[in-house]
Amino acid sequence: MSGISRTILFVRLFFLFWCSFIFLSSNAQLCIGSLGDPVVNLTFGSGANTGQGFTAPGYTYVASSCPNDGFYTITSSTSGCFGNSWHTVNADHTGNGAFLLVNASNQPADFFITTVSGLCPNTTYEFSAWIMNVLISATGIQPNLTFNIETPAGVILNTFNTGNIAVSPQPDWKQYGFFFTTTPGNPVIVLRITNNAPGGIGNDLALDDITFRPCGPVLSSSIQGSSNIVDQCINLQSNYTFEAVVSPGFLLPVYQWQVSTDSGVLWKDIPGANTLLYQRQPTPAGNYWYRLTVAESGNAGLSACRIGSNVLIINVFPKPVINAGPDRMILSGKQTLLTATSNDINNVFNWMPPDYLSSTTILNPVAAPDRDMYYSLFAVSPNGCTNEDQVFIKVVAGIFVPTAFTPNNDGKNDYWKIPYLEPMPGVSVRVYNRWGQKVYQVIGAEVNWDGYLSGIPQPAGTYVYFIHFTDGTPDMKGTVHIIR
Image (cartoon, rainbow, N blue to C red; front, side, top):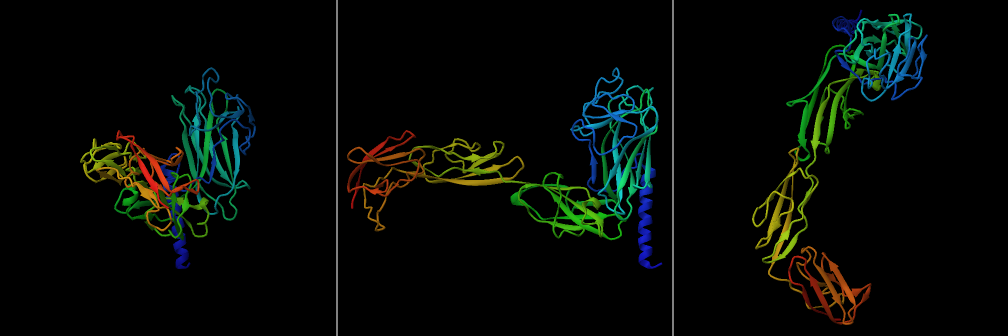
């Protein structure tokens, strides 16, 4: 025997010993290594139906949540059955669907058979199902089930017996499961569940959430120098190194790091992340879950063949969204309201400097500076992320209104403008000709008249303007001359 052959034999024997140890040390024989995502997940849907792709030899479907001996149903709840001798079951195992409810036939028999495809060849899988004894009385017959995984030709790949499933004072879903290894080629298998106990008074059970998941050696991942959950702000992200350790059991393992942005519902392979180490780079804000998946070479491209590590979580929080508001202009001795905005009222605010402000911790303080001032608004989100913005207040002794302009397109004095008036909130300016016709108007915006009305140049002459203030400043009236 060559050295390579001896190595392969040793690894396979080690893995068989590892699985055997699990079988002997666990009542339910569930995987204590690492699992992959469910390849098959029979949930019985979300309501009553008659199919689900299996047959129940000797049993008859009935559209009742209290089936009699030899009958079964698919339901999302059951109550008041047989003089309240059954538990009231208000939901399936996960709380959001339906389950199979069986009242055993008088003779022990198979009650669930289904064919499963889509598994990987030469791969170890964990089969599991959730069972409930719905009977309340401890004197009734207890369910006793045997699970068989078979080839379509009837060759048993593995079998497991639950023993008697005892009653419980309250509805209690219990998980049962075991391992099996698929055959080479096209590994179609048959799942057969047999009820070993007779019917009559008792032996009434509910079945839900049958799953097949690839199982393999222990696969453990971690973040170097950190816990496995990291919270950070988008503008203060660090580069983290993920590392993983895989216990013996693979011959030619292929590694692939994955990321999920929806809390593990969908996983995507990260291109090029194919070693036990992965260097995470900064990302946009969001919640990121990471894991390493492993499969044997040749099966790595099939998700049904992979096992996955524990999850590493990086939460990237955005900066608070703030705006200190538009710049302002006030007359000396006046005040103005700062109209800052924020995306979250739970942010903590602070204005700097505090001079001439009615408050430094609210979004909209009143400012009454006696000189030009820049104010900075700082915000801290509930997640501890920070942001800042700035507003400028121009303090002027008075409003200077030009009395003439020459709109002749020579680049000199072509527009009538009133300096600093724009930052004053709510100020309106109107201009009228000598016949009382309004030829120009602007509210809360820059005064920048080109001497036109609806695209028509206005004649040279004298025009009257009115300036209205909303802060109590007296209105202004005067004349402006168009010179052509």
